[in-house]
Image 1 (cartoon, helix red, strand yellow):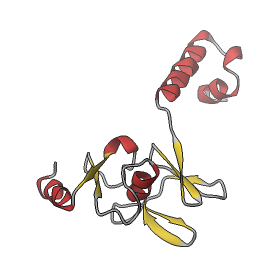
Image 2 (tube, rainbow, N blue to C red):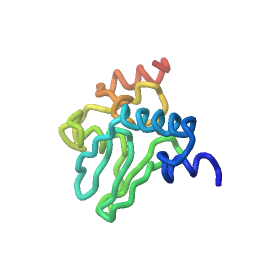
Image 3 (cartoon, helix red, strand yellow):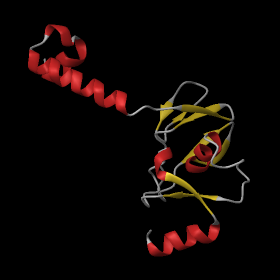
Image 4 (cartoon, rainbow, N blue to C red):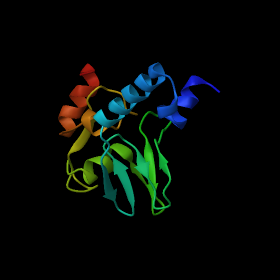
Amino acid sequence: MAPEERVHQDPTTTSPFFLFLWEKKQKKMESVAEEWRPFLTAHVSSMGRYGSCMGVVSNPTAADGYSIIEVDGKAYPTHRAIGVAFGLLKGMDDPLEIDHIDGNLSDNRLANLQVVTALQNMHSYATGD
């Protein structure tokens, strides 16, 4: 049995070293709180994940860099769905845009999203800011 498996199975019966690693991992997981909000009949999280009404949780990915989620048979850009769910946008038809602060289009964590105008978003894209 690998040390990692023992840590996850029962940290109280392992050596002090493995118990230390287990406690360290628990603290790290607690420091990154994930918040879920409803989006139509699904849910999206502050960590950029999607949960369907069937309970499936995923990190959507797309070939062009932007991820898309499908809710009720319709496709939505993940970053805009998160923007709506967390109150950055008033709705999917809001004229404001969501910019990925670090430029990574697949990083849909709430902390990496900001509301901008179309002009600001074009400038950000052109300059790499």
